[in-house]
Length: 158
Length: 250
Image (cartoon, rainbow over all chains, first blue to last red; front, side, top):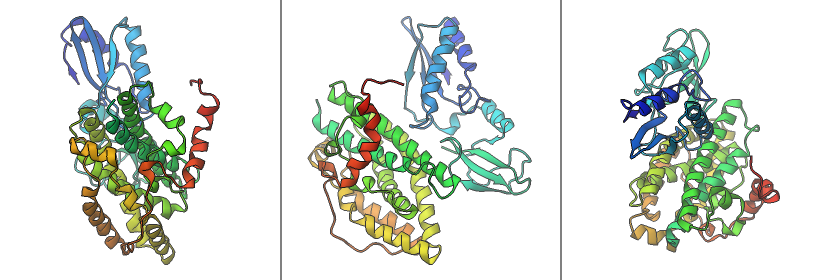
């Protein structure tokens, strides 16, 4: 996220409101940490938040939009517009470091650029196997640890 | 209105929509829960891409139609999808071969579309191609696994390839609108992608121990709205609710 006007009072208020919005499908992380919030903008008295979908068909996209609206309204920021942008396309590199740590603590192996064996979020072993390339949401694959036998979700590198 | 652009976007969007709906028919019926999840996730990507493309088509048309309107309130002969994607699911081999052929074609096509002179189409394609890469890999894995599997799985895969191959000419057909867009640098000619497609398909089939299908006389007509009887039956189920309650919102 590039908080263009975070130094500005309104920008800071918007950033604060957004940091409280969890991802609807992975509530352990906020939409800011997932890299869904692209920009907070302020120009000529018009302020906006731009958000980007993770996957084109992700059913969470509409819910996120609604939740952002509610969070902004509750912070007294009714005038802030919500815009959707596609460029540059969302990638897992946009997940913040803090977001990655929270995913791990939540039991989801965070995405790793060098795709290989995932590290088990429970015991840390890399003696793991892919069960299914697709998991419970579009952004995750299903894995299992061969040491502790625990099945786990792995955030797909995208 | 830019009629050629509108028509080309509808062709692209209808491929995604019809294939997405076909994949949805597997929901709750797949051989294992993992496959069930996979096919539903593939479907979700297809529906997502269809929404972006058909919403844009509606904007280009300028008559107030959006993706929902285009999806639910057109009859079969107004659809411009390729014949391949409307073919019934059949068994798992039939479904996965269909998806492999489409995804291999679409990955190459959308890669080129991401450099389109039309900025909006370029950004939709850049988003979609990331998903399509995964689809192509996923389905290629199954081609190898089942092609290189038992005698039964191998013969089902080979039969499915032979069955679908008659629709490949149609998949690569460039109609007048598409050629017009190609001349303006908005889309690549599909014909220009065909050699690479056959090469990519051949490489996976070789790995799977499957034979490249024999040349057959192709069946064409999808881009002109001449469909197999299967499409209207699929649409009947897809469209019944919004047609019965056109003003409903949920």
